[in-house]
Image 1: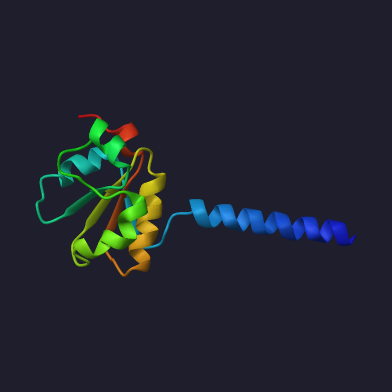
Image 2: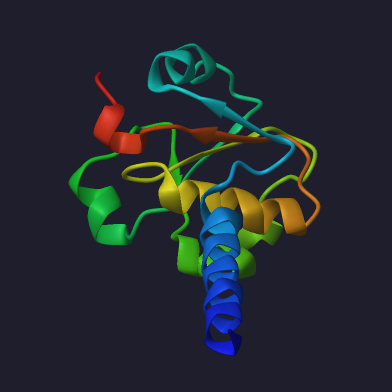
Length: 122
C-alpha cells in the first residue's frame, strides 16, 4: 500500500515537471513562420535568435540578432521592455524557454515563433 502511494506521488511529480516545461506560458503569443514574415518589416520590433552562435552563423534570418539562450538573462538589459520581442530557435523549444525567462523579467510583449528555423522557408 505504501509503495503504491509513493509511486503515485512520484508519477504526479514527474507529470507536473513535464507539464511545467511543455505547457504554453500565459501572456506569450505564438505565431508561425508565415505570420513572422509580415512582422519582419516593422523596425520598431525586436527579433532575437536564441540558438548558439554556430547555429546562427550557419543559417539565420537577417533581421534577427543572436542572443543565445544561455546568455539571455545577462543580456536582456540590452532589450527594450516596452517593445515586442520575437523569439526564434531551431524548433521552438528554446525560444519558449526564452519566453519564460523574459516573462519573469517583466517583459509584456513576447512572441514565440512555433517550429523555429526548421519551419522557416525564405
